[in-house]
Image (cartoon, rainbow, N blue to C red; front, side, top):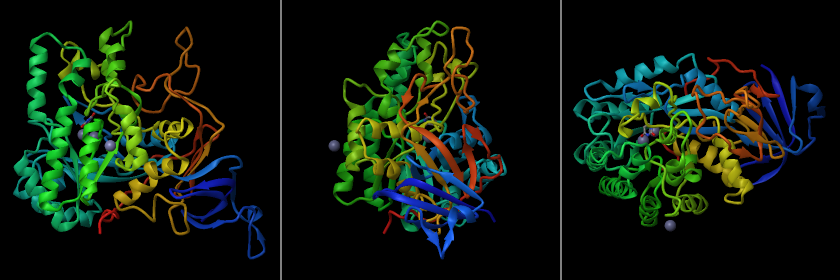
Amino acid sequence: MSTMLIRGGTVVSATGRGAADVLVDGETIVAVLAPGSTLLGHDLSASVDTVIDATGKYVIPGGIDAHTHMELPFGGTAAIDTFETGTIAAAWGGTTSIIDFAVQTAGQKVFDGLAAWHEKAGGNCAIDYGFHQIVGGVDDDSLAALPKLIDEGITSYKMFMAYPGVFYADDAQILRAMQVAAEHGLMTMMHAENGPAIDVLVAQLLAKGKTDPYYHGVARAWQMEEEATHRAIMLAHLTGAPLYVVHVSAKQAVEQLAAARDIGQNVFGETCPQYLYLSLEEQLGAVSEQYGAFEGAKWVCSTPLRSRAEGHQDHMWQSLRTNDIQMVSTDHCPFCMKDQKELGLGDFSKIPNGIGSVEHRMDLMYQGVVTGQITLERWVEITSTTPARMFGLYGTKGVIAPGADADIVVYDPNGHTSIGMPVDENGNPTGRKHHMNMDHAAWEGFEIDGKVDTVVSRGSVVIQNDQFHGRAGHGQYLRRGLSQYLV
Ligand code: DUC
Ligand code: ZN
Ligand code: ZN
Ligand code: ZN
């Protein structure tokens, strides 16, 4: 087993920061020490196999992206990142664990769906990975399977109030699933949008010839999100089920969550970088030589981008400060423009939904520290510590402390990251190309004052000196416990 000392840096946790050296033995953190400490008279730098100099840098627990969709089948195609490419990209961006979604479709056995996802991910991940279970068909059979997921290390499952005919669950199905979840301590994750009503609006817009990507966001109006969020909260209240609403984008949905939390309900919300930075107005203005107004397809995701004039983005940052929203995941669901997003040329409803961001979450959220939107400690909390606690990984993940996995990121506040695929006038790359599998960058042109310097996954250096040193297959399956937010 090799040993490692990360010395000279500022260790940042969800609750504070301080100068400290971190000692790693094998895959585990064994000590957090005063700077320059010796251990029983031994000069540590001379005694360990590897020394990482973190002088002037932050030392943080590795990022945990609790919402990714590698290889997700969607709209006649599939998300373009495999577990290999997606987890390598995640590592480049300082994320050392993902929780992806295994999918059960209606009529399929839950454990068959799960087995298919183990098949896709097993032996292919560069960082550790876990699963939530999508239940795309709630029936007697899938309800009986829910509690058994806990033995498989899956303590959260997701339903969709959107996408009728695909993953959709109606209120009766949601009620029944929540009753089971409440009994067993499973976390119910909800895609909260009123799918049937949205489908009416979609058909009406298309009939009027409104086919551009922008109308995706018009159809999926904030009222559709607020209403579904409220309904999910009420069903959770009735059943006593803990509830986690994914990809919250509307300020009115945040208000529903905040009100439920104020009366003591175990209700949580996640947002994503796209809802903090991008807007419906920018999507309307996105035009390219190649695609014209269809350029906006790169930002078609659900929930959709929201109007900046209505103030959703500002409210979302505020709710991260006030803890009305508890954490930030990506909903990483990447599609190429060519042959994938292009399926929706002439009909926005056929554009596969999703944005690829797994590589950029830590940087994009650090930019919130630079601009004064959140503190350094809150950055660590919403990207690592809370995701760990929310989904039963805390102690092993989400913290730099003796006994925890050595998942550590050295982050350089004086570095700089140009996001996207910058090219010169001849189309040759001039900067670092992203490592996600997409042929375009949803975050093109974003400049970050900060840089991922070194990434360690369970004691192994995976990123250092702008090089990937990891390997697909290093990542292990994470058996998760029950949410540590439940009493
Ligand atoms: N939203 C997306 O943007 N993509 C995948 C599924 C979803 O709900
Ligand atoms: Zn969703
Ligand atoms: Zn509020
Ligand atoms: Zn999702």
